[in-house]
Structures are given as structure tokens and as C-alpha cells.
Image (cartoon, rainbow, N blue to C red; front, top):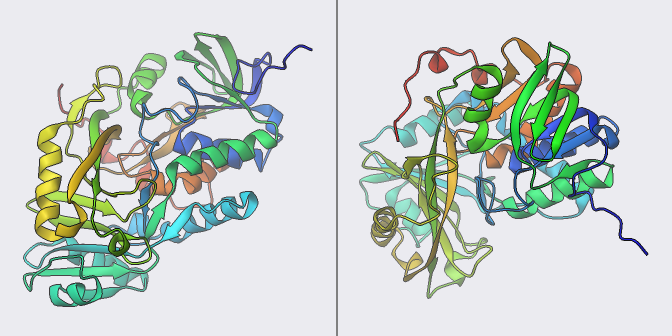
Length: 399
């Protein structure tokens, strides 16, 4: 009996109504939400690697999810982020969001924690302001002093990125969505304003509406296909897992996800989840690379910086380094997303995550699906337009 081709093989069908380029966190979500609005057979996902690969920015077990942000354009959307994940959890029966609480802390002399407090007050978001002493009493794992302060938000936690991607894909496939894995996009040819032809190493595909969620590969594809040189750059980032002798103290029901600002650096971390280890990293601490030149080799200096921070502020979390792994950020000059249609080509939508998108993945997938199907979204995304001033004539770091 002949074996049947799987949906991860190049499909015989070549013409689709909707195509999504990139099947990581955002792309997989867009495929899922498209499948809830249109017949799945009219949707194709194109992925340059195997599904679940570790070459981009959507891998690993955990990403911070939080209502707390320091800018209103995010806090306005944040409740909808949780709603989108809940819909996926309800349909799949798979728990993806784990609430641990979220603690943001730093020196009183700084302004970062105050920005969070101000924004949450403006939005009427429940939160608790804590002194260093109050943090120590509530969470004795943290070694804060009277010179520090913090804000705690109970709805923060982690979302399981690995499971999130797989669940979005599985639900989309169940509705007939096709996936072409190991398929490298070489060129996009817009067909006026009515469609697009996608040239790949497995031949050409065509669609009426195209969603680009291609992460670190976005800049090159957009420039070569549309002649638009977006001010984007890629960095190789890393997170480190640490053995701790006190696992119970750092379990998700006793230890929150956290973000901290000291010495113009932003650190972040997680309770024990996914691995039998805590996890921490330095935001935007990596070198500028390209998707093709990144090394996958962790930088020892960045690892040491994180370890030294933990030894000072969360000393029992880091008895010994377990391992460090790398990922990629695709950054914008203002660290805001891009969620928009391509100028002059309204049939093509593009997303750029600016290094902090995974928590938003399901909601952004819904937004992109709405734009593709209806031409617009019901969610406020004006701050993320591709034509905003911060993206005009902006300089990018050189390799």
C-alpha cells in the first residue's frame, strides 16, 4: 500500500487564497486564525526549515507573558492577548499560559519601574507597588535593598512557546491548512494589487493575500521583492538555564517571572519550567548578525553578565550553569512592532516582532488574519504602522 504524502511535504496544489510565509510563533498563529475564518484548504503555510526548528526566535519552552508594559500601545492590547491564548487553550485542551505573577524591579533612582506604574495606573490595571523590603518578605528569593523598588502584577506568567507553535499548527491542519516545510522563499512577485506569486526552491505558489511572518529573514525578502529597505537588523541573543539546589523555592507557584533594570541593562527570568532549572537572560545583549551568519555559539561575556546579576539579586537561583542557548531578534529602531500592509501592495501584510513578540503571538496571528480576510483589524495598531516616523530614514547598526 502506497504511503500518503503528509501535510509537511510540498503540496500538489499551487494556487491558494491565503499564504503565510514563516510558521514560527506568529505565522503558526496566523494559520490557525485564518482556518477559523476561511476554508482551511485555501490556506498554505511556507516554512524554510522543519516545523519546530531552533533557527529563529520562537523556540524553547517559555516566554514571559504580562499585562504590565511601560507603554500604552501595549497595555491597551494586553488583555486581548490573554483572550486569544484562552481561545486556543479551550479548543485544544492544552494549557499554554501559566500564571506566576510578574515582578518588575530596579533602583529607585531609575525611571523604568515608574513608567510601568504610571502606565498601569492610567489603564486602571491592578498592580501592587513594593519596596525592596516588601519584595524580600513576599518573595525571599530576591535580595533587594531599600534602594530598590518594584511593581507586581498577578496576571503575569509564562507562555509555552514550543507547545504554542505546535498547537496552532495542529488545529490549523485539522481544518485542512497545508504546510510546505523546508521550502525557501527566493522571491515574491506582487501581481499588481490583487495577489502574489511566491518563488521557492520547490517551485512557485500563488495567492490572493499574503502574510509575511518571516522573522530574521524579513529585511532581505522585503528588499529584494518590493524594493523597500526597512530599517531592520538581527542580533543573536541567548538565555541561560541554571541548576538550583532549592527547586521548590523556584517552582512556578512560588516564584514569579521577572524583569529588572540596572545600569542601563534589562535582565529577565523565569521559574523552573521546561527544564529542571531556572532561566534568565539579558535583553538585547547580543551581537549584530544576519540570519545566515549567526553562529549558534553562546557568548561567554553575556552569560557571565547574567550570572553576576543573579548572584547579586537572586543568589539561590544560580548555583551552576546548566546550558546556554541562542536565538535571533529582528529589531526596529524604536523596538515597536510592525503590523501593516506593504505600501503600494495592500494584498501583502508584514509583521516584525522587535524582539518581544512571542507573548503576543496568538493575538497578532488573529490581527493578521483579520487584515488578510477583511482588509482591516478591529484592534488598535496605529502605533505599529510601517509608515511611522521612527522607520523613516533611520540608521541601522553595521555588522
